[in-house]
Length: 161
Image (spheres, rainbow, N blue to C red):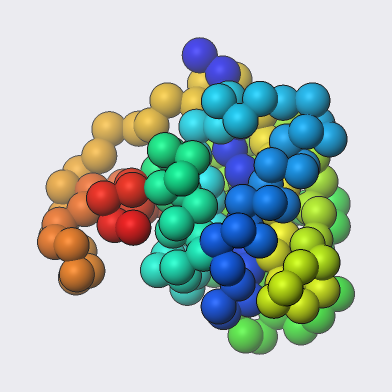
């Protein structure tokens, strides 16, 4: 089974329509169907960002999150030009999309929407095997109770939206 993982970065408060708008535009540009998306991925610090969480829910896919230190080790073609000190990584969208391997089919793109130029970024990776790994159920301190955690990423499904 193959599928697309969309890496997403966003400034605090970026609205869901801007996140979804960019994702849909980049999917169109890549000639990919929205139904081919199997997950959104981002940095742990954005795990509860409303625009990203709501975008994953609207697409009906899980939100995978990764620690900034792990993302910082991923080689990406387009690292951010701004200092990485705020999040601890020079790439969120591309690095999060590439975390599990695969082919980069859409390099990092920036939005130009209502939250300001470049408020949202996304990149798309095609994975040869996009199945979600077995989850270890570990309690997570969220408002919605326990969610599955995996050693490499934490899926946040639409139940957390």
